[in-house]
Length: 181
Image 1 (cartoon, one colour):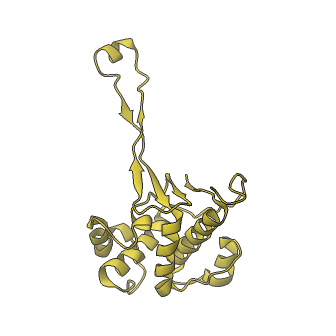
Image 2 (image 1 turned 90 degrees about the vertical axis):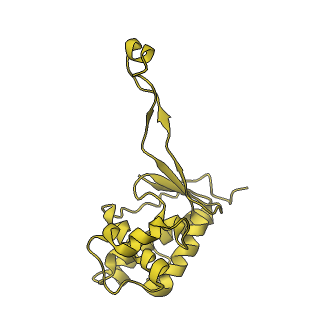
């Protein structure tokens, strides 16, 4: 059964910024995975980073819920499952009868959608925060940003972390789904 309140919309929402902001946290986690320590300094092209490339090439990492989840289309469910699932739905092509008869109107694939575990993501974020040291507060992420992250050289990483942490924690507490769109 889902917890009380799971049928309610709590209107928790936070605009993170461009998707690239998440990539900075991916890079940070990748360094923890590959080197056992954070990067020496923030990077400007996170997905080009050698540690990031090595981490995503591995079949499993300690941070799979973070590293293998889409940054723009996907969900984190408040249930425990080990692997991020990626589903690529098929959609019918709207071609005419001639195309359908001769095979050109066959199925197309839509953009992949990822499904992750908010419970596992929370565990990963707690592990990352042993190094990142984001102040954990009860207020919404934008208040934490204004009071504790603004101006920090690791601001992109910390901002991504606090948004994911807040949303995942609320998802688990209320049986809600975290939606990326």
